[in-house]
Image (cartoon, rainbow, N blue to C red; front, top):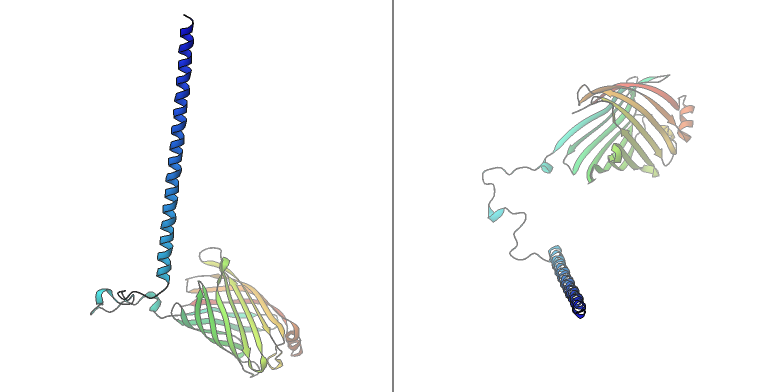
Length: 300
């Protein structure tokens, strides 16, 4: 009588072991199938990528098929007929004039007028650029610089410029230069204008100008400005020495009555260095000046 319970218990244990063994075998089979499916999917993905790369390579090189449609022709030979062809944005010619400084400059010993303007005409990528800057004292043009340049867009917000520069108005001695530079908007919204010049008799020059606009309100704008000039050799007839010749740093506060018209006031510090400073002293001038400025800025 005691053998039956033992036999029953053994039967139950054997059944549990067989059930676990079957479950383990089924799990192995499922895992193997999953690995096979993953390997198949990976192989298919690799084959698709290889085919796609091959198609891209075939598109990038070689001759176009004989039946390829001309990308510059209109569909099926149709054109606009009597309707004028639309002119796209980069086919329009535009023009603009910016007088960034037209101001009275007052120092301890003198009062003069300064102008600084830039005009351009052309398209988005190529345009004709005119730059002019000068000082007028007692109705006489004391020193002036005019540049006629061809500008070409080389990057977003940046133009390369090539042309000529003409200096005049000082001691009736004129100078002509070949000009090359870049102008644009640097990161953090700094406006930069950098140019190099080559003239006769081995003369060289470098000019650097930077401006920044800080909007106190939508109409009240604070504008720091910095300008520096360097020359490769001395030019005593024009009062210029080699090396760092002069620099000026100032700040102007303007109020835009309209976007196109804004009066301003400001202060500026100007200094000369090296041989330029010595030449200015010898002529009775002041190589270091603090100036008060007041003027208008306008464009159209």
